[in-house]
Image (tube, rainbow, N blue to C red):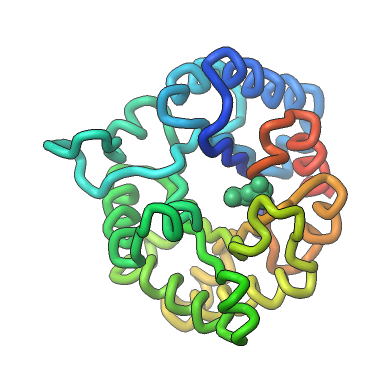
Length: 256
Ligand code: PGA
């Protein structure tokens, strides 16, 4: 049985005070509902400058900390970058890699994402690897091809043991921040396909354990249906994760 996993991607939002407050609200909300915490793995991914602040606010709780990106080198002359070793050092357990905003706004390629994934895993982080098609790719019936390429490219050269520390996030680009979520059927189709690719590349055991999150306008209203799909193991939440009440409602839906 795969555990449900709900992660908040705060993107480039909050300030130090708000980050501390939001993390505190999530911790308090979960502490009040131990059954949710038992059933759902929860993480928040604040911007780099607030990782230490949020790490402090999460101390003693079951809420994990994640970074939103990292470099593929451990240290060195890479001005403006943050290494996986630093993310780990400041208390991160997770790192989001290959988010569509990094692929499409920052030009990250599958090869770069793969390098980062290898480095993050080597330094003990769990990777939340995002994949997803654009609207044009969906309209051209290329969704599954794009998912296959991004999955293959992102996980290239990883061992089965490393795949145990990879979480996938299916995030259709057209659904991110748009209010247009994928339907439960569209999500299920993509997730089942990704699981079949994982089985083909890494074997059935890895595939059956692989958590595959859905992301893209996931909100309390659509969470029960989306999270009830057999291959949807949780959510990567953007906008709604900035409101603790909404984020907790999504966790509640995951606990059902
Ligand atoms: P959204 O973002 O929930 O605001 O659509 C999801 C994401 O980008 O991870």
